[in-house]
Image (cartoon, rainbow, N blue to C red; front, side, top):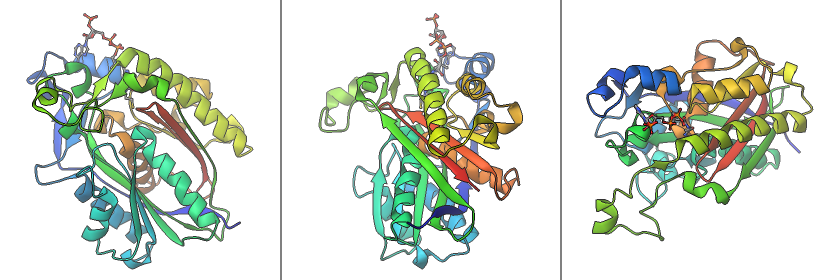
Length: 326
Ligand SMILES: CC(C)(COP(=O)(O)OP(=O)(O)OC[C@H]1O[C@@H](n2cnc3c(N)ncnc32)[C@H](O)[C@@H]1OP(=O)(O)O)[C@@H](O)C(=O)NCCC(=O)NCCS
């Protein structure tokens, strides 16, 4: 078996910033409520002409450049998203077109906020078996397009952006050491978008009932999230033969600062070993982990040999984790 590692990363945040103060003018909420309940201060919102594929392509271009590769070197593109440009074709195909990649395999992966780590796990397998040389994994979201801007319990939480990673064969100690994936459809009603699929195809009624937007039971989601994120993080440490004290940086899904703090406590990690950027970006679903990773690399917060743990959970529910030696 070969070894795989993350060769390059990139991220892109749309220009427009929507602050909590802006939201106060849109729904019955307050900066104080949003900050104290979620840790979010502001989020980025895509311009009307931007889509999940254009955001993803920008992040992907940077990841390919940072990996010192050319677009033609990419063998496979996996895009993790719950807000694709269209139901089909897949957003990965549209990203390939923007980047002029004409020969690669392309598909989308829907595991909600855990999608990027699911994609990383797949990329790891393709590289380890020698099937492919360079796999591009993109997490990209334009969640404002499926957010109900009349529902204060959800619209204050989400943001938009994209992150990407190129996974390639490793000839050094850098490697994706282990990944763990999980999910349970019993929790499907906690966080979902009811209409637009085969169960409730678009009709006048589905539009009238606002069924094409994200629905969430916040409290119940919170509880499952803390349990599953902690379990996933501990499981991947065990699988990679690591101890809690080996972790140099935990990059958790950025859904709520209180969830992150509880997971941090369960892993006995000090503040400086847990990456938090939720105050700036909100919850960008499949994009939170690659955005946080790429930003941490850009800010030199990660050095060669560091042990990183990624962990996420999302609608499904799904959960996933990865242990990476940088
Ligand atoms: C959504 C969340 C922030 C709500 O925080 P909470 O402490 O659980 O708050 P509650 O849902 O108990 O709501 C408390 C009150 O605030 C109100 N409220 C909800 N949204 C509000 C808002 N934006 N502004 C002001 N008040 C709001 C509720 O109506 C409720 O009022 P009531 O007590 O009069 O009924 C929290 O549950 C959460 O983050 N859950 C997990 C969500 C998540 O991770 N989602 C993504 C998964 S990938």
